[in-house]
Each structure stands twice: as structure tokens, then as C-alpha cells.
Image (cartoon, helix red, strand yellow):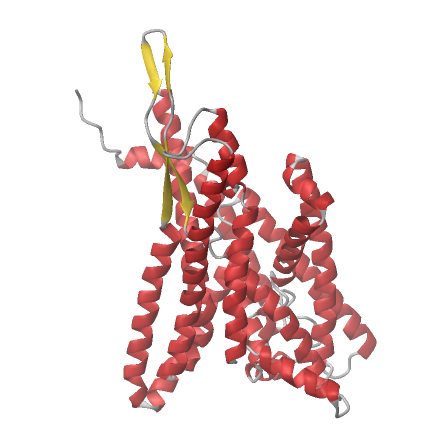
Length: 444
């Protein structure tokens, strides 16, 4: 028996070139560079310096700016970022669960149905982008100094709304191209790059804060330690699976016996990855943006003004109530995301197992298997949802406890997104390389 030959550098280079991975990575990198270039193209007629100061003093605008990669603070053509597309995707997926016609498109009409749903998502993205552009320009109307002088007021607003809407649609197009022709999820990667680009700014602010108060040095060390431990738990949770043992029947073909080997079905502890986090942020920031605009209006004193003030406190990213709602939404969206994933449908899995004569040890095929799988998936998803929610909150509260609040945006939501997207990208690269390896093995 000959030993297995270890792959040489030439083998790895051949696999790299032949698998098409190089082209996918170059394409993805090129689209992300194009996105970063667009962030520095300002909307005509806005005084960026004045608006950046306005944004830095507003928690909601600053929070939105984090996920747009700084595009909102610069008032670039990509100021709305990927937000409208993600919000549109969430709403269409929710409607697909409620409306039978959309559910049929998603589950029964195959690729054609999914294409039609994607088209609905794009159309609704344009509507949301237009609405958010109007909201954004309405917010700017209460800060006249942010507009350059000598520009026709009406044409300025119309051109700005069109530019912001078109920029958001362009970001959506780039996101879909990355998902289709590149590597990884386009929307997640765009958010990932935006967050990474903000780290130098957060680091410089933190360094300045600690240099002004040396007593905060120990707090910074504790915070970074918590960040590191959080990243370890994120990796563990992202890779953790619940293995359900499956007994396969033996089949005799001629003198040979096939099958009879026990396998398992892996159910991920966190089936949605970073998507529940991204969905929760997108949903919460939408009312925050609208309330920020309403808060700028000169509302008459009374019940309406009181209600707006209360809602502003609830949806303020620096408030305790916001984090409670955020945690509950992560748990709910994790369950929702698990319920729509094709590989986590107990009835379909039970039918397929019965069809091929496989079964779970000690469980009868058919309905009992579906019920057993449903219990397993419910428990697994519940543990994963709680873990995801807790991990998302721990760094945020650690920022308050250590008084190092300059890293709050990174710690509260962005850390898990960065690690989750990086892990997903690594896994997809590994899958491409393994697929090529298996192809070479079969040819030999």
C-alpha cells in the first residue's frame, strides 16, 4: 500500500488556477475597490465638512455612517449604502411567509420563481431608496449651512435625491454581482469592508482618549481582552453543529453489499450566520432615521411631541431599551432565518430519509421522524439565537463598564459581522479548492 502523496506547491498553484477561484477573488476585490471609490464621490452642492460635524454629534447618523463605510458622513453618492436593499430583502422574505402567492414562488416555482422574487426585491429597493433619500434631504433642510451657496434650491434637492437613489441601486447591483460572479455574499462583504475602513478612525479616537486620561489604560486592556474572547466564541459558535445520526440500509448488488454505514446530518448552531444581526440593525435603523427627521421638525407642544421624544429614546442606539429590543429581534430573526432555510425543513428531511430507507436510531420513519427533527432544530436554534444575542451585547456593555466608548460601534454589532463574514469567505474559498481537488481525484 502506497502512502498518500502530500500536495506540492505546483499542485496547489494548478488547483488555484484551474478552479476559477483566482478570477472570482479578483472580481470581488475589483467590485469592492469600486465601492470604496464611490464613497469618496460627493453629492453635488453639499458642504461635506459642515455635515460631517453634524453627523459626528448625532448618535443615529453616526451609527448609520458606520455601516455605510463613512459614505453618509461624506454625503457621497453611496450615502444610503446597502441598507435599502437589505431592508427590501427582509420585507420580501417576510411577505413570502405570509402571502401564499409569494410563498409558491419561493418554494414551488424553482429558479424562475426565485428570479421573480429577486425582481420584486429590486423594485422595492428603489422605492425604499427614494424614500430614504427624501428623508435624508429633509433632515439636511434643517441645517442650511450644509448646502453650498449659489445653487438653485429646487434643482439641488431633486438632483440630490436622484443621485442618492441611483447610488443605492448601484450598490445593490454591485452586491448582486459579487454574490453571482465573485466569492461570498455581496451585501455582507460590502458591510464588512465599510466596518473595516472605520477601524483606523476608532483606533485614533481611542488612542487620543487614553492619552488624555492614563487611568483608562487598564480599561482599554480589559476591553480588548473581552473583544478577543468574544471573537473566539464567535468562531466556536459559527462552526458548531448538532450531528443527528442516520442509519442507512444495506443493499446487496450481486455478491457485493453496499450501504449500512451510519452517517449524520449536521445542523448548524447558528444557521443564519451574520444575517440575523444585519437584519436586526436594518430594521431598527429604519424607524431611527425617520424619527431623527421628525425630531428636527418644529412640532407643536403636546402629545405628538411627547410620543416622538419617547420613541427617540427607545430607538436611540445608545439607550438600554434599544439593546433589549435588539436582543429580542436577533433571537426572533434567527428563528425566522432557520425556518426558511431549505436544509432545515423537518418534514422534507423526514420524507427524503423515508424515501431512501434511512432513519434515526429509535425513531420510526415518517411523521415521528419529522417531529423528532423539529424538536432537535428548535432546541439547537434556541441555543444559537441566545448565544448570538448575548455575544452581540457583551462588548457593548463592556464599553460602558470600561468607559472606553469610542469602540462602542465596533464592539456592539460590528465585531460579530466582521468575524462571521471572514469565516464565511474562508469556508467558501475552502469549498472551491476542495471541489477542484475532488475533480482531480475522480479524473485520476
